Amino acid sequence: MILIRFIVSILLAAIALAAVYFGGWVMMFFILAVAVYAQFEMHSVTGINKKPALSIINYTAAVLIMPMMYFFDNLSGGLIVIAVYMVLVCVISVLQGDFSQAQKAVFSFIYPQIFFIFLYAVSLKELRVSQFVWIFTLLSAAMTDTFAFFSGKFFGKHKLCPEISPKKTVEGAIGGIIMGVAITSSFGILTDKIFGVNLGDLVILKIVCFALILSIFSEFGDLIASMIKRAYSVKDFGNLLPGHGGLLDRIDSIIFIMPVAYLLFWNL
Image: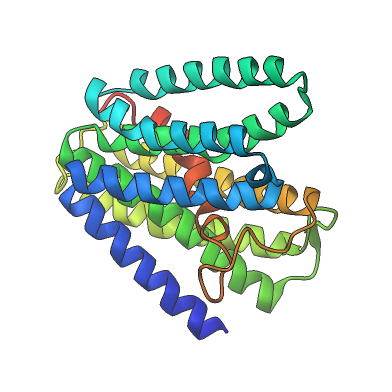
């Protein structure tokens, strides 16, 4: 199972890096495809797929976000879609005389679409800069998750959040953060000039701090995804990826830290 998990991770990383390399329309359609499938998994978990009107609005908004951001070339396109979406959900709730499902529908949409907005917003930066931020962020989440898994497997003794995720340990979390920061920082320090990234003074200190912040939030992203699954009594978001479960099971940490990455690198 570990070998299958590793192979799937490598294939996903290769696909993501290919999209990062080409950028532009390739990146937009890549993120759009991932966002729509993630919407499908959230609908399956929360049961909104059984509510046709709300489900259609969610999918329509998810499909429109990336093209609107591409058209406006900034975050505003995505925020416009979200604003109109909220209006439509409220209108449908009034017409149906039932607000009980609206809250679930909105949550199913906002998680994960709000994260994909920032994920794509990074791609709207100058190509080399967006490539650096993308790889830096992907590496942080992937290395933190990978080494948290192995550190917990071999050294884990103390439960981290047993009420949310019984298998996660304090030792695993610490090991994941240490290795995540070490590897991500090494990448940033060695390649920032290659990508033409200008972080100003104290470059090394900034890169290490950025890597630490992303690694810590990556751990929270994983825990929040676990909390959602526990709330809806499911083991995984889906079964698309052998060894991982659903797509959201693999990218939960990555998408969660994209708003943080966007904020950290906003002035590039």
